[in-house]
Length: 476
Image 1: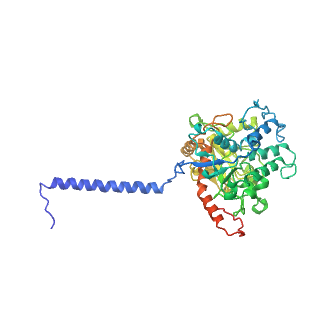
Image 2 (image 1 turned 30 degrees about the vertical axis):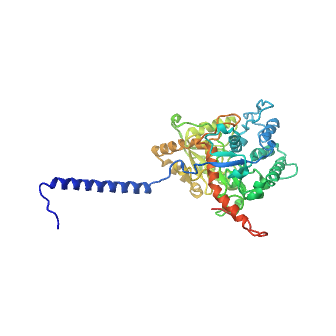
Image 3 (image 1 turned 135 degrees about the vertical axis):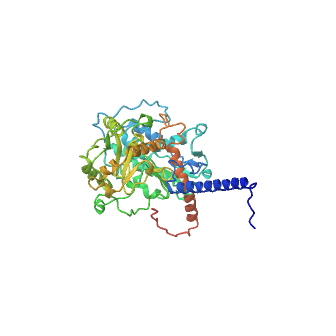
């Protein structure tokens, strides 16, 4: 029986209807809000949900001659033979006291761009009471460690050999870099930590594409910190017409599953968003026109863009004059071109980010630092090689971005500038790292690899004696 609505019950009924109507509208609004949230890009500019508990790091006890002692050798050696005639390059050596425990890293741009090894080591060498903000916790027992850090300045070693100009780099005889590589491997492979995991939980910093060139097969199972994979395989440029890399890259030494892509050290100063001024050029590029392998695309792009209105293409070396030109060029341009060079990436990308010049990344195979923590599509423009090589396409595409579009990309970029900064403000690299800086983000990515490493070690232990399992390509 339906109750009869009288004059006395009508106000209560009206209030109930009003309440039900409001509740219905509220629920619908919530559903609409959450559905829109799911439809729109849910990715934050920086994800902070990556292993908040840190990582335990044991530092292998290599001789000092393979890290800070190597810096002392660098500062006492002859100038780099690759830039002898450069009047702008600073050749003055610092007055190092004989008791200096931590010499500064070279300012030579050919070497400085790869200085991640110096800052990572400096963080681990900093006294524990000053490492409050460090994601990596240094432990002094191998059994307490998640990973073993190998403190070899592999990039500095390789660059010193290249700078000698003796033509011995690819040879073993007379190659001091090879001798150091061999010394490192002979040491770590005789430790219980290496034998326990076959080197899988060992971390090597190999930011120079040619670092540890002669022993790569011996460290293929380890966690490698690299700027990209371009220096780890040989590419026949004829197979791809120099336009891009082949779709399938066959190699068994590097993989995004076990290795970590790290940023180059930027060479240009940071521009704060509040200091940004009106930009007069559409697109800017400075660098060498002629490259090898996948970098052959650069020459083709150069010829397509050099006469385009609003596009500035400059060829030059990153000496003092070139550095000032790059600062002006990047700060005066809306977009900065980032084509592949001899390898897919370069320091240029990170200079552009610090200059708030919107990166235009032309590469079909590029790997970038902190993927999953940083979302590059929020502040960069990605262009396929085929589109970029279509006459007039690239400049026309960039001109379609509105002023509001560019302001949005630039403001997002400003929020991630700090994650690509290694420098902790100390000349000797010893001191607290920036909590949101490059070193901590690298260790966060290394921490992501630990469960896979432990699983691989367990699988290796149950393998029957004498069983031969070939290395597999772990590309994804």
